[in-house]
Each structure stands twice: as structure tokens, then as C-alpha cells.
Image (cartoon, rainbow over all chains, first blue to last red; front, side):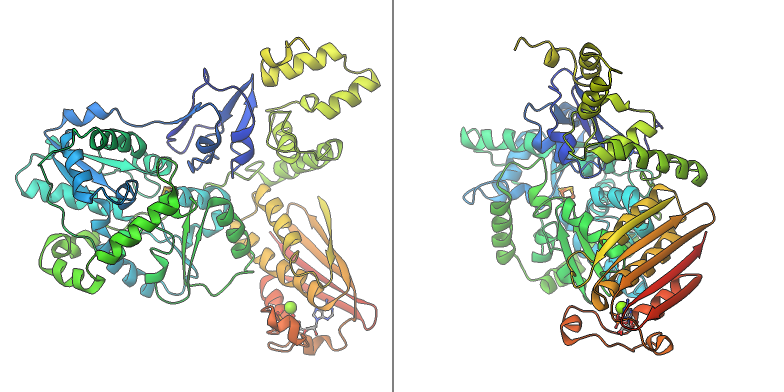
Length: 453
Length: 136
Ligand SMILES: Nc1ncnc2c1ncn2[C@@H]1O[C@H](COP(=O)(O)OP(=O)(O)OP(=O)(O)O)[C@@H](O)[C@H]1O
Ligand code: SF4
Ligand SMILES: [Mg+2]
């Protein structure tokens, strides 16, 4: 297989994997196969949505994060926190309390990702106006969706808005602000507390441009456990209260479903959960769905509140953030206030750096680069398909009969891995039961086939 | 490479299924993305016309290295005046069909715009065949 185009944050730990089919069956891009009793990831198909991580019954799938102690390699240690982080905690724990605990853990600064939203919002409004001929314009907010479009809906890459998400904008800004305040550029470490694997992958290989202003990424569930334990054990009577500038309601809700679409104007829509998004994009490609100006698409159900690395029930997170937004200053007020201070003062400079390079199509669907070859392969796939039972049981190690036929044609599988074909071959005397057992051992490992029944 | 799909008249919840299947095949064959876009838009309109206006039908697909040949063959009322049907905005869609968001009379003109060759044959009271060719 080709060398991967993407960095992946999701890893399958071979020693822990029991070779079941949960991950293979749920994967929306058919990026997982089972061989030798272990699940393996096809790099170029994986979009880091993390659905496999959710369903693994033995926690064999991990989200690779940076070692927490790496923060101490820097003198200035910034925790860059998205608003869904505050939504992880019960109502009686205040934002200030959470942020103080982060300082206690060793960070010297706590900044909020969504402080970049107001500047982005202005840039986005201008972008939407300027590019109103392209319908629909698709938000680049969720990196799993950007990758999904690249690999599965390549004809739509030009519809993706070429603007950085709030995370990159905030990180750029805070880095500059700290340098202005006299911190040495090389001493600044900005660590993003992530709700998902996709954001990690995007930081390590940004889908549009090449370098990220973020130093490292730490998983939200890891930080949540540390902070919540301290609060619960009462060790958290800390008095260091970080200086947090207040967020607008719009900013607090930006990462939730409809967070962007309600502000986009025109005919705007939001779709969440990656399987829903795939269905929607299928229809959009056929122009069954037309005349939409702006599309907000998110891989997780309830958007980032449902990120794979969150701990709290996503519906409570949404409730809590809505309450926080109701207490926040209105969007116009914050714009006025921000006009005098903070990020807004630098908006023109920031806007210049907000544009990302156009996204490249990276189709994973093609059977071959060369169309005549692809046609030959497709004919083979059709012929093989006729021999398969269409049961989609997964016993061959592929997620369904059709993808199995493709795997055979691409040379990754053999037709006698199908349990139905084996029975037919045995009846014809082409294959012995012992041979069948050995083939199945090749897919599922020895253990499952050496049982004493 | 040939494929065939059946289409059920009046069942809007399945409309678009065959077009999506063909789209997958074209992606697998690494056909130019812009070509896929055009073909699929035309195909979808033609598929919906069978669903909206005919009793039942089938989609025949023939793909080779230099062209994509598509035919929608239906049994249905047929089209009495094809030139008229080709006009933008002409539609005989029932109020029910309009309610579903179809019936603007833009389908056939849109097909014409998106394929290289369009041939329509129709016998009133029997059915319609819409043939489309796109060169790659
Ligand atoms: N397969 C068919 N069988 C019978 N009549 C047809 C068929 N296809 C098209 N027609 C006739 O031609 C007319 C014009 O078709 P066209 O696709 O342009 O518009 P429409 O289907 O009415 O509306 P729209 O496609 O914009 O939803 C239809 O209203 C119908 O009378
Ligand atoms: S919806 Fe949010 S949490 Fe989920 S993958 Fe996208 S960016 Fe990550
Ligand atoms: Mg029509």
C-alpha cells in the first residue's frame, strides 16, 4: 500500500486487539480489515473520526497524545482550551475553578480556543459574500469532515471554505501576544486540549497548510480526570485565578451543532454525525439537494460536545454551554468591547494569515489510476461479487461482500477466505476442511480456531 | 462494462439510488471529477422523471474507456410533444409531485446541458426511452 498522506492519531494496539469486528463494521470509510486475528487500519482511508475508538470493547484503539510532561520543556506553558471542556463538569464547578486547576497542574497561561471566533466570524462573513457563487460553501471547522470530503467526495473539495478554524487563529494570536509581552518565542509551548482524534491529526498534518502554531496536543479525557480528581479531593483550593477575557455567546456555542450555521446568513444548514453527513453529501453531489449557501458539517453527534475524548454526556454538555452562553454578553457588545482590546485590535493582521491553501482531492475510491486497468478490475469485482453470498458477515476479514471482492482484486485477500465459498469448494472437493481451517487461522489467528468444542 | 438497475414509478424515497450507484462506479474508475458531476446530475434528473412520470423502468449503463452511455427505459404514458417537453419551465407534474419539490420543468433542459448527446424516443401510451452519451 502507498505511503500515508495523513498523520493518524488513532492507533490499534496489536497486543490488546482481540480481533472482533466492531471497529470494522462501524467505520464510515471502510478503513479497517482483520488479518492474523488483528484489526489493521488502511491509512489513506481513515479520516480520524474516532468511531472505532468508541466501539472497541477492549480499549485496543488509542488516541496518541503528547506526553503531558512535555509541557515542562517550556518556560511559558499555555493550555489552549475549547469551550466544550468547561461543559464536561457539573454545574456547580465554575469555569474559573477549572482554569485555576489547570494552572495548578503546571500551565502558566490558560487561553480559550473560541476567543478566535469573533475575528473568524468577520472573515467568514466577508468570505461568504465574496464567494457566494459557489454553492454550498462548506465549513472547514471539523477536520474529520475535511478529510472525508477529500477521500470520498473529492468533487466537493473546492466548496470547502479556505479559512483556518478558530483553533489555529487563536494559537497564532496568543503566540504573537506572548512574544509582544516579552516571552521568548522558543520558550513558548502551546498545548491544545482536544476533544477528538481528528484535531490531533490536523495539528500534526494540517489539511490545508504546512505548519501549525500549536506545540502539542493533550487528550481532554486525560486532563478532565486530573482536574476533576483534584476538585473532588479538595486539593483544589487554589487561588491562582487566570485572567480570562469573557467570550461572546456566539463563541461559546460555535463548536456545537448550529454554532456556525445560525450566523452564516442565506440558506444555511447544519448536519452532524458522520454517517448522516455521508448521506447528505451523496445527495448534494447528485444535486438532489440544491440552493444551499452554507453548510456546517460535523463528524460527531452533537458536534464537539460528542467528541470521542469527552467524558460527560453530550446532551448535558450542550445544556451547560447554553446556560453559559445565556449569561454571556451579547455578540454585539463583545464586538464593541473587543474592538478596544484583545484579538480584535489585530484583526486585519490576523485575517491575512487566516487563509489556508486550497484543499486537495485525495480520492480513495479508485480501483486504479488508469481507467482501462480500473475497468478490468471492476469487471473482476462484478464476477467475484456473483460468487459471494451478500450476507456481509465479515468472516473474510473485510467489512462486507462488496469490499471483500475489491480487496481480492487488489490482491489483499483470497476468495477462499469467504466461509460460504469454502463450503462450496469443499462440496466440490477442491478444498479440504483442514485447509479451510488454516485459511481462517490466517484471518482470525490460531486461538479462535483451536478451541475444543 | 455494463450495469442495469430497476426503477420503481411513484416511489420517491428510492429516487436517486441508481444514480448514486453509478456515481460510485465512476469514482472507482477514476473518471474525471467534472465529468462525473455532469453525468450524475443528468442521470439523477432522468431517474426522477421515470419515478415522477412513468409506471416503472430501468437504467442501463455502459461504460468504456472513451464514453459513458446511459439509457432510461420506462413503461409509462409517454411524451406526446418532445420539443415542448424540452422547453425550460414546461411541466405536467401533478400538484402532489410539485409538493415534493419537483415539477419546475427544468429536468430535461438540465439533462441536455450536461450530456454530449441526448436522444429521446417516446410512444404515447407505451413508454419513453431517454438516451444520453457523455464522451470522456
Ligand atoms: N419519462 C417520462 N415519461 C413521461 N413523461 C415525461 C417523462 N419525462 C419527462 N416527461 C414529461 O416532460 C415534462 C418535462 O420534464 P422535465 O423533467 O423537464 O420537467 P418536470 O419533470 O416536470 O420537472 P422537474 O424535472 O423540473 O422536476 C414533464 O412534466 C412530463 O410531462
Ligand atoms: S465534530 Fe468536533 S469533536 Fe467531532 S471530530 Fe469534528 S472537530 Fe472533532
Ligand atoms: Mg423532471
